[in-house]
Image (cartoon, helix red, strand yellow):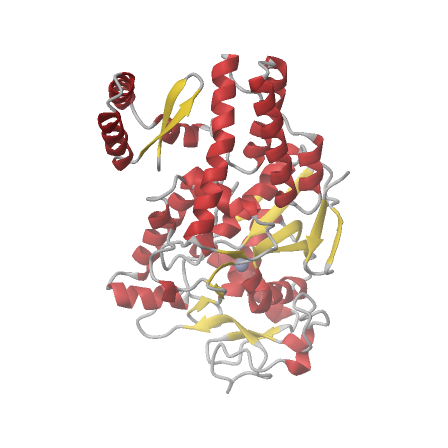
Length: 461
Ligand SMILES: [Zn+2]
């Protein structure tokens, strides 16, 4: 079975054929760095990281671009609110996103371009569009794209131009058609601006992505990704700009669904409780990653702390099997991908089907453990680990291993000492003392699991 992917553009799933054999170019719209990431923001990074890991596993050389939108109205508003220069706001939240990505084991992109580093390329693109009559500079400092100039406009979002209202992105006085959208916005007093042949100003969001995708992936490339909410107007306008410039642009458009809370798209109104930085105070990064990976990327995930906890318990069971297997085998666990897991991933990244296969493998592995069938244990453990590593949740990955070991050896020694005291109390049937020791250990955020080879501990986060 070959890899098939769902393409928003054709509204169909079809076999993936790269433009250049053996290579894949992916552009993912990254964050507008104006606030700390919540789990809705980070889901896109996780979903497309799984796609990238799977393509790499299949042997493709993947060039993965994820941009940083570091100039935008929202950033300028935030700068006023936080009484900071706009660039310091962008820098602060870019770091917050980088931290969240690495905490969730999202691999660094091949290139991570910032919009403000690509003004030259944006001006070049506008020049092409003005020269070929697709864009116009009406003299107020703005530059607009004529949407009537492009036949395929609105194909991605399946809309009709006649049904479309105004683009609503600036004063309409200078527009030839209210639906034309701004490539570039005239400088306003106090706002940052860059010089262009048509006057000083700053880029519109859509222009940024067309220019950056072209810079790193060329006029056409394989896959463009982003959240569902970007289909219109952002992605539609990216297509309009790039195709008007004569570029082939993206062949496949992939969109991840949202994380919802109480049935609604996550928004600032929910406060800080769903920030990645808050959630990883309660669960480990690997557990949050597992939770965000579990649903199909095109399915909404309704967030609740109960569901998160349920997923964590499930993950610890799988992880527990791998740790026991390693102990029993006395060797590192291999990394294999089973045919069933591969079939699931090849079917438009059907992670839920893959999870069922992982559950089966853990069951087989535990049966082998009980029967002391070391070869069976080794085979099942390698297949479990291989699947987890595609999902970015390999507990032996160095990025997570530190949290499994719980820090330095001194802590390990102290926990073992306390556990020995507890065992001694139990042996003399002083269950009150044994329970008190256990409770105090738990209060420190240390989880204890009784295994056939004795108690094992992990950090709760
Ligand atoms: Zn974009």
